[in-house]
Length: 66
Figure 1 (tube, one colour):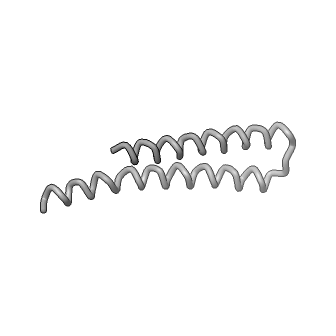
Figure 2 (spheres, rainbow, N blue to C red):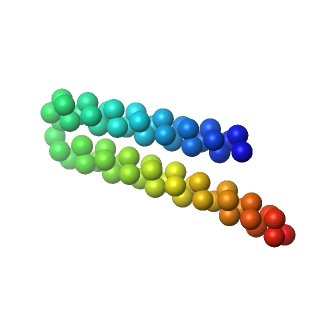
């Protein structure tokens, strides 16, 4: 349980860092392609965190059934 909480916390931390960097890029006038790449990176990180959170629950259910 402790490991999953740490991993989730790290992902949220990195997502927040990504949002701050994205905000700084927008305010600094960085060209649009770099901003789009940043948005895609943040969305992928959030999707990965959602998928990884589902897996431990499935493995626990399988262990209980066995």
